[in-house]
Image (cartoon, rainbow, N blue to C red; front, side):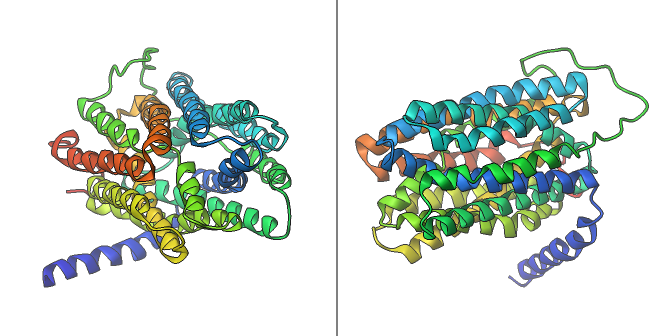
Length: 417
């Protein structure tokens, strides 16, 4: 026990002292990408918690429609993430895709305020996710190629922390405006402002300098050619986890169903983002020291427990509900940056963009069946069945990751055992 406490103390000391020493020495690109994500998520998360409310109260659509909208939108984004990742490896140019992606998404979201049917919401969510698909893999590859592998977890953790900071600002702004008497329509329309600021900052991005000796460009391929078996096994386990990881909008719908007032629904999501913002950087930096696998297993276990808790929770217990949503933030902090750092650890250097394309495709394409399954289970069999299904997928994936997917894998970070 004493030895374990000593190790824990060492790890905590490393996480904070070592992290603070290297944090501000990270390249300008890392910080600028983080600021862009902060602004973008401020715009996105002003709208995201309101979409299920807008569908239910204005357009009179239920959980099944929500599942269709989110599933189609995210599946489209996932396919484009593979396309943009492959193109980045071929062209070695990321900025044009990043700028175009943020512009399209930023100006599509606020137009939801003018939708008169759920089909209109579907079209605009589709455009939003097309923008996300164009930018995500190029941005991830740009971030991975801008830092030393020894601080890759820290860099992705910082990015996720700033992204989640935007996810705090957005819902809080939405809650404030709703509390002041603004309509859902006006709050959604207000998201134009951060979208404009986000685009301006994206235009300031610079491509990192390429070294003098370029390796031959990989042949154009939509297959997993050239990617190692351990990466493919990682994708398989990620697919299982994602099958139970339906749209987060179902969490907000469940919170409303459990009696949380409409004006407090954005606050619940802000609590998730606040916890993720605070812990993403230190937990992702910790993966540079103790390994990606441990953080991912812990995070997926936390996800399973959260979903079981939300399915079993009694109504009209707002304090417990907010505590459970905060616990969900721990899952996000322990996994979001670490999952992406692991991709760069496992991928050959000349196929980083393609690897991120396949990672993002796997993590997103299954949101269509995941959201459809979850929505159908929710509507036909009830909340507990739907949430229990998601928990079972997460817990099984947490077992398979170390025992099968990454077993015998080479070192996953420069300091890992």
